Image (cartoon, rainbow, N blue to C red; front, side, top):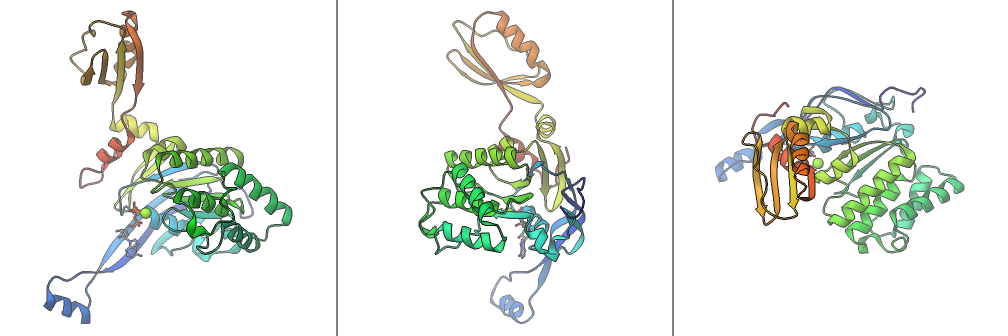
Amino acid sequence: MNEQQHEYAIVSSGLNREFKVRLKAEGLAASLRNFFAPAHKTVNAVNNLDLQIRPGDIVGFLGPNGAGKTTTLKMLSGLLVPTSGNIDVLGYTPFNRDHAFLKSISLVMGQKQNLWWDLPPVETFAIHRRIYGLTDAEYKSRISELIDMLEIVDCLETQTRKLSLGQRMRCELAVSLLHQPQILFLDEPTIGLDILMQKKIRNFLLDYHRRFKPTILLTSHYMDDVAALAQRVIVIDHGNKVFDGYLNDLTHKMHPEKIMSVLLNNGEFICLPEEGCRLIHHDGHHYRFMLDRKRVPEMAARLYATGNIADLTIEDPPLEDLIGQLFTSDKPTRP
Ligand SMILES: Nc1ncnc2c1ncn2[C@@H]1O[C@H](COP(=O)(O)OP(=O)(O)OP(=O)(O)O)[C@@H](O)[C@H]1O
Ligand SMILES: [Mg+2]
């Protein structure tokens, strides 16, 4: 970290980024006019964004398509200059791109890669080793640990273009972590991967975080990633922050209900309360219903008291529903 240990690893205040985009014209005459004197509009991709993230935290960064997530990560990692506002990442101003700053962070984008397409990963690793000035001992111990954790020993000598998406993503993580960054910006690291591979990457990130405690800011459209990795989430919509807090609080505020699933040993189900309860599925001895979360303990006790319960589970409604609900209205919802 720059000189002293800071309370926050990432701080932004009043952060803005505008883009000037060319308007499309309809019809030939308008197209010609537009060709000679193009009309533009300004898009506020990120609007007055304040962030405070402590060292070692994992924060999920959520929002619908075009909300401004990637633009924010690019500004925080120094790839884009803000239109206005302040950013302090580990004591550095990212767009100055100090060498010491670049050695302290990594930006991993599921849609873009750091690996050289025509080279096998092992050669990209060697190039990065020189860029980051790692000693022989550092390189050997780090790379062998990453190869082991990411299970990529079989991919190292294959040309990157010939690797599967999952193999490439794991090699991508290895090269991005070689210099042991204190901050990891992850933009859709599991995009396009099948469920098993998503899980593998999630577990790797959890394990890596346990060992090295980097600060992680993660975007993902897969809510399982966010639920598994982050306790705190920041939600943005149209560039504006609409929620910043614990994922649990977001769930509770948006969904005051839980889903209860009950499997009976035999016979009829007991009567459901008329208020705060809604049957959503019934199949033989299996019942599934939504229940006001305040009534869950009383209901579970009542059901167990019948002595007729083979299985009972209580879960939160899927996070996808929650986020979908958060963005259904035109105006951002402020829970
Ligand atoms: N280079 C650019 N030029 C013009 N407009 C841009 C540029 N980059 C982003 N934008 C616009 O800024 C807004 C935010 O885009 P951004 O890529 O940050 O969204 P996002 O939250 O990452 O979306 P997604 O979930 O689809 O990845 C969008 O309206 C987008 O079209
Ligand atoms: Mg994006």
